[in-house]
Image (cartoon, rainbow, N blue to C red; front, side):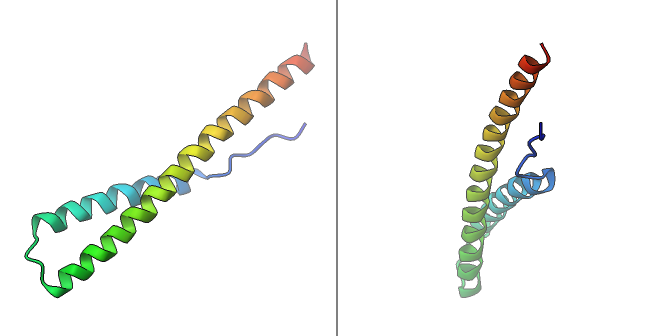
Length: 84
């Protein structure tokens, strides 16, 4: 029987969480220093894009890891039945 492999590597999972945390942190720093010059407006746009991508990636990684855990558990149950 072929072993199922997780879709997301630990590095990809780390990157997803890091991107979300970094985006939120940078946005809070930007809000703290808000004098709103033109270059700061561009900064806010870039940070909001970072937060959006980070949240989408985090959602995908969380969903995929939950599905992978279910698949791996099912494979373990099947292999346990075969061995009995």
